[in-house]
Length: 174
Image (cartoon, rainbow, N blue to C red):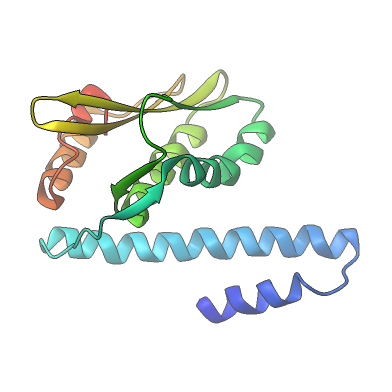
């Protein structure tokens, strides 16, 4: 799969007609999404086995959010629904977090929110909550779609506890 992505990346640097560019862009986006699905399946297997590792590094949260928003803005526009990303400005731009896991979680939730929202909006809110144990990053994905079943929310909470964190999923926060 990485080879296909590499070939598409190289092709995108060559002169293309608008017609070719449109199809190549679609192929590029599709292969990236498929690669993400494959990685998610592998990570799920690791999570089930209790072997998923978290690798926190300094991440510019604003840049990470812009990248995620860029992935889904066109899809939301095609469905004619609003798509909003709100990062509360009262904390440092850089946070110590596993960017890969952060991106996986948010993109999975946003993808499902957009898929199951026929009209209205999808909104991602990120805020920093400081309590006695220190700062906690709260991420909320809300939408006007059909919502998640309680069984699915319970499953998310159990899987999150295995990885270590994300215990507020039942309250809509991750």
